[in-house]
Amino acid sequence: MAETITIARPYAEAAFRLARENAALDQWSGMLRLLDLVVQDERVARCVGDPNVSGRELEGLILGICGEQLDGAGRNFVQVLVHNDRLTAVPAVRALFEQMRLEHEGVLEAKIHSAFAIDDAQVNQIVSKLETKYQRKVRAEVSVDPQLIGGVKIVVGDKVFDATVRGKLDAMSAALTR
Image (cartoon, rainbow, N blue to C red; front, side):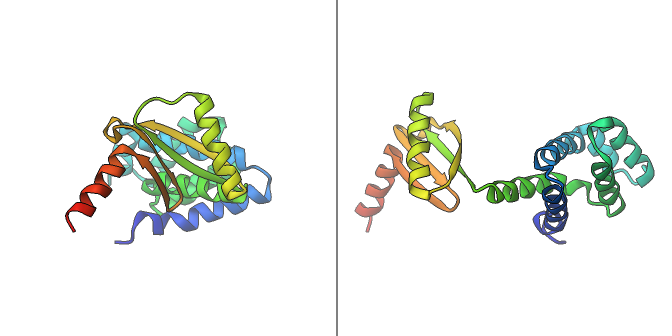
């Protein structure tokens, strides 16, 4: 069976193209966020996998829950997903859509892992340095990981900047066992 990301990509690309052509990126982000929440609700998820629930019933359920929060194109998108039995791919569709949006807007996403909570001024300082380095806007997500012992680890795309005590200890351990 194909990987979910492979299944989701054409749907995400179609949604992104439509959203971009209609200058509705924010609106589509909101509709996909809502749709993601709805299909991941355990009661709806049971219906998605139930062979006794027809496509028409499933479509009615989802569109009924979403109501007026989906515009005509969003409702059509749900109908296509139901018709092609692709509702389980909605979380991946949303993630891919958001990646395309960030790339389109020239925004890099950074994950900052810190051993201790860091304040807004420290986050802003890190973000500022990353924006200078990459010459792009950076959106940061901060998390606390006490196992790092001290310092921060920053992940931007496939680049990892490890300035943690744990990272230094691991490097020393590797050097000593050679």
